[in-house]
Image (spheres, rainbow, N blue to C red):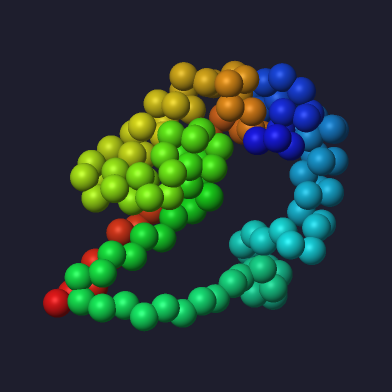
Length: 130
């Protein structure tokens, strides 16, 4: 959000492909800590991170794309804990709807500076069986 704001007011509304935006994104992607999936399997493998954790019966596992987590990271609607509570009480579909409403209400990308009006938003909720 700060990077988009630095490039100008409403940059994501219609200026996605301008020279300054493309140059900024290229610079950002060139950073050693930048991770992104790619059609190039070797490039994706370099940016893929793995972790393990213990799970038990009835545990919930939430997997989310960066577009879905914008409810926490960019739009500041939830904290990590309150997002989990909302998923459990309202469900993923309701939260995707809420995310899309926020994006549409700020189609000019001014309240929440970003590089494009909307992003893919994927989430998966898995409960470990008893």
